Image 1 (spheres, rainbow, N blue to C red):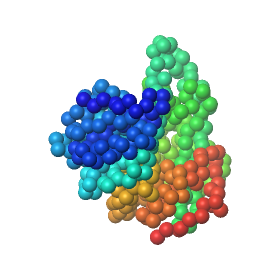
Image 2 (cartoon, rainbow, N blue to C red):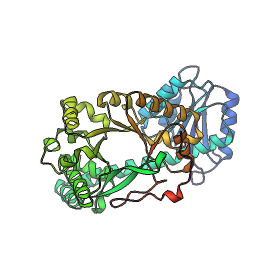
Image 3 (tube, rainbow, N blue to C red):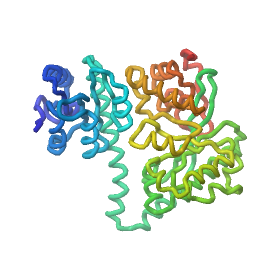
Image 4 (cartoon, rainbow, N blue to C red):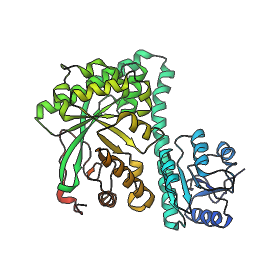
Length: 402
């Protein structure tokens, strides 16, 4: 059993790290680096003890060698996520096995590091992991807040009333998707907003809609607002509109009289919550109807979670959006760079456009451009705003790419 070393009290520790490596010298060295950086570290020499250790202690990140004597790091990753899906797992390897890297990223590993690992890199990834874990827990607590309010009030009518207020105040913010090669705005993504204080977070709004079985109402309101914005501005720029899989079962989506139908050729429907795709009846038939109407389809967050490649095959998208887990820190991560190149090559072979989202720094931008990414999105270019935010090109100097 691993026990946390008391280098500092919980109030001053940067975070709790579970470090697993059967090489005693490397484990000791990496543990020393992390402790000196202010982390509390528990060390294990094998993978069999991971589950008991995670059950006994609370950790912010697991850092594990991928080739252990008894189990491999992929099994460690699975064991960690079985106990806590949001727990960041960083895998280390000495041989740079690309197949293992692909599997690790697909299963939700935060990062895949190649040994030897520089002290600065180890410290940085530990800090990123702790912050990622804190953000994930905050999101989970926000979602649970809805459930706790439900249980406390025992009043579905209250939830419905709050959802009514949110639905009545739905409006859209738009974030540019830029084409870097010619410094132009390629498209905008429409993002839902509302003024109900308890449902301003989109994930809470959609959780309420699902609980009340009112996803179709919310989807229609979003599409109506997007259509009204396009009509009132006269814009001909493509617009990405998020679509919950349950929206595919709403016949209004396919109606020629629906507000967004007249702009179908301008719209890219971005499928979210892809784990639910298998629950949609006549899924392929419904996709065909949307394409016949002129809409393009996009797959959101390729590279995140468990269902990415399966959803890719099911959806056969016109556009793929790379998950920000592949984008964040890509300028410092050779494995991520190789994975991005592979996705770009795969999509290019099928004639699929690729959008990389979540770009926050010029370094991430320039690395992605060098790897062949041309359609880019993120706070680095512009934050979401009213129709339609301008991109400050004069402040975005950089290479135009290949």
